[in-house]
Amino acid sequence: MPELPEVETIARALRTGAKETIEIVGREIDRVELLWERTLAEPDARTFEQIIQGQIVEDVGRRAKYLAIQLSEDVLVIHLRMSGDIIVAKEPTDEVTHPRLVIHFKDGVKLYFNDPRKFGRVWLLEDTAQLFAKLGPEPLDESLTAAQFHEMLAGRKRQLKALLLDQSFLAGLGNIYVDESLFLAHLHPRTRSDEVSPVQAEALLKGIRTVLQEGIRRNGASIDWVYRGGDFQNHFNVYQQTGEPCPVCGTPITRIIIAQRGTHICPNCQAHFDSLIEG
DNA sequence: CACGAGACCTGTTCGC
DNA sequence: TGCGAACAGGTCTCGT
Image (cartoon, rainbow, N blue to C red):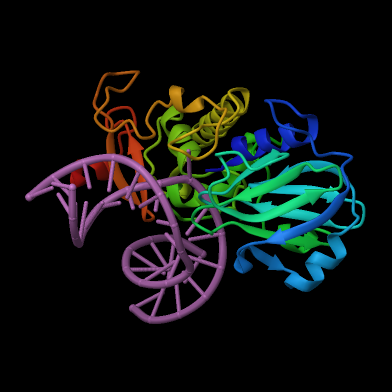
């Protein structure tokens, strides 16, 4: 499910109790249940179960697509990868289909880490510095300027689609928001990063911020059975809109593969010299 | 460094 | 109805 806006929505809900979620800040952990070993990246299960006991949730934040739950002594970090989700309830609901980790609070409330595909990972760390060390800047951080972004692009020679998906370049974008950003910026996803002009770089950064803010405002995108509550999926311009008319020019949206990922473009609005050859 | 392929996993949808 | 292929919000590793 989750890209930056979905993780941000979850973090806010866990912190404040918004969107019918039960807030977890202030609750004390009684015990944890690890139902799929590989979900836990660090430390080992024994240590994890032992040292998390009795810790109190102090805050919930986000970095890139990581959820960072600050506890009394340590930080519980969760990456939802493709199909992970968080449900907080007193008893499992029908949304809890594939629980991999359950955190039991002393008052009976439980946090379920639900993850059908088992790609998600959890860490319990003293601090997050090392885990987050290789992440690129946060796109919504206003200290990132268009000029700096242009320099970042110029310093690499990669296709925009692949580069924007690279978390060490820019942190938080995934397949949906990259496709939507490139559409807003009228850039073809195969465009080489070092061929992007300063004006185009500014348009791209603006497009990225626009779709991320819109995603957050709409509480994220809820596709298929994964994740609930958001409605950004009803406002996609190109993502999963193959065959539908482009909202700007009416040309049918096409789907191509770049970096092994389905990629959606308007072949007219996002023209590229290669597209003439590709057909 | 850049890129493609393959892993890691389960579930849904689509075509025959 | 059945069955296999393709596909899915992500990231890591390996070979070229």
